[in-house]
Length: 106
Image (tube, rainbow, N blue to C red; front, side, top):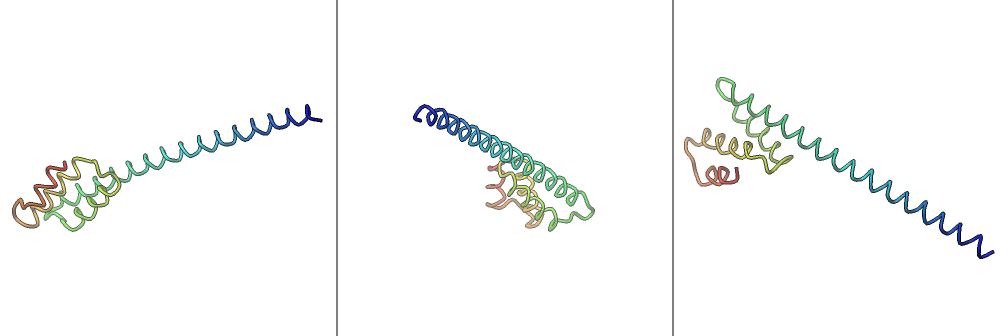
């Protein structure tokens, strides 16, 4: 009887280990997919911000909103920080302390 239980325990352990490994693999794939989607979202938002700035006159409100969304999705994007400083400078007429801090972040 004990001999029957040991292989059954071994099989159960193997199955549970494989299940955990498969679940971790799915989680890793989902995490990388989320990161890719966030990167794509940030890139799209940056394009929208650039388009708003190319309008004549520039649509600073839309550019600022899209740029903030890009920074939320990808906070390490240097161009978004530089664009944020540019938008602030365009709104205020000069480079203030906040705009300079945004440039430093870029």
